[in-house]
Image (cartoon, protein in one colour):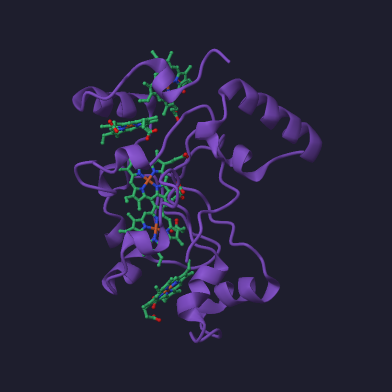
Length: 184
Ligand code: HEC
Ligand code: HEC
Ligand code: HEC
Ligand code: HEC
Ligand code: HEC
C-alpha cells in the first residue's frame, strides 16, 4: 500500500559522471532540486521536529512492523509514508487535536509532507538496503533503537569509515568502485 517516495534518487543505476552532469543541468534549470540540496546539508544530530507529528515509539507500541511503512519495494530504498498512507489508518482520528492537526491540514491542501531526512548519503555513494538485509541487529545496526524513539536523529554514523569497517568484518568488498563509480 505504501509506495517508496518517488522523489528519491535512483542513484544505483546511474553512473556518477552522468549524475553530476544531470544534477548540474537540473540545478541550472530549476535553481535547486530539493533532495540533492538536502544531501549536502549535515544530517541532524539532535531529535528532529518533523512538519507533521509522528512517533515511532507510539506506533511500535501498537505492534506495527517497520515493513508496513517502509516496504523496501524494489529492495533498495525503504520508502517513507506520505499523507494518504497515514490516512489509511487515521481517516477517523480527531482532526482538531494538536497531534493530528498538521496531518489533516496537509490532507486538505493536498500538500506532500516535507519530512526532514535523517539518513541521507551524498549522491556519489551507492547504497541499497537489499544487500544489507543480513545485518546482525537488523535495522538497529545502522539506525539505532528506532522503535523506542519518539523523534529520530542521526544516532548512527554513515561515514565511509563506518561502511568500510563493517565490510572488512564481513568479507564484503572494500574496493572504491563497490561504493563509488569513479571513472565515468
Ligand atoms: C506507521 C508508520 C511507520 C512505521 C511502522 C515505522 N516507520 Fe520509520 N518512518 C515513518 C515516518 C513517517 C518517517 C519520517 C518521519 C521521521 O523521520 O520520524 C520515518 C522515518 C524513518 C527513518 C529515518 C529515515 C530518513 O532518512 O529520514 C528510519 C531510519 C526509520 N523510519 C526506521 C524505521 C524502523 C527501523 C521501523 C521499525 C522499528 C520503522 N521505521 C517503523 C513511518 C513509520
Ligand atoms: C497501520 C496503521 C497506521 C498508520 C499507517 C499510521 N498510523 Fe498513526 N497511529 C496508529 C495507531 C494504532 C495509533 C495509536 C492510536 C491512536 O492514538 O489513534 C496511532 C497514533 C498516531 C498519533 C497520535 C500519537 C499519540 O501521541 O497519541 C499520531 C499523531 C499519528 N499516529 C500520526 C501518524 C502519521 C503522521 C502517519 C503517517 C506518516 C501515521 N500515523 C500512520 C496507526 C497508524
Ligand atoms: C547497513 C546499514 C543499514 C541497515 C541494516 C538498514 N539501513 Fe536504512 N538506511 C541506511 C543508509 C546508509 C540510508 C541512507 C541511504 C541513502 O541516502 O541513499 C538509509 C535510509 C533509510 C531510510 C530513508 C528512506 C529510504 O527510502 O532510504 C529509511 C526509512 C530506512 N533506511 C529504514 C530502514 C529499515 C526499516 C531497515 C530495516 C529493515 C533499515 N533501514 C536497515 C543504512 C541501513
Ligand atoms: C552492518 C555491516 C555493514 C554496514 C554498516 C555497511 N555494509 Fe555494505 N554490505 C555489507 C555486506 C555484508 C555486504 C555484502 C552483501 C552480499 O554479499 O550480498 C554489503 C554490500 C554492499 C553493497 C553491494 C550490494 C548492494 O546492496 O548494493 C554496497 C554498494 C554497499 N554494501 C555499500 C555500503 C555503504 C555505502 C555503507 C555505509 C553507508 C555500507 N555498505 C555499510 C555490510 C555492511
Ligand atoms: C563500503 C563503501 C565505501 C567504499 C568501499 C569506499 N567508499 Fe568512499 N565514501 C563512502 C561513503 C558512505 C562516503 C560519504 C561519507 C559522508 O557522508 O561523509 C564516501 C566519501 C568519499 C569521498 C568524499 C570525501 C569524503 O571524505 O567525504 C571520496 C573522495 C571517497 N569516498 C573516495 C573513496 C576511495 C578512493 C575509495 C577506495 C579506496 C573509497 N572511497 C571506498 C563509502 C565508501
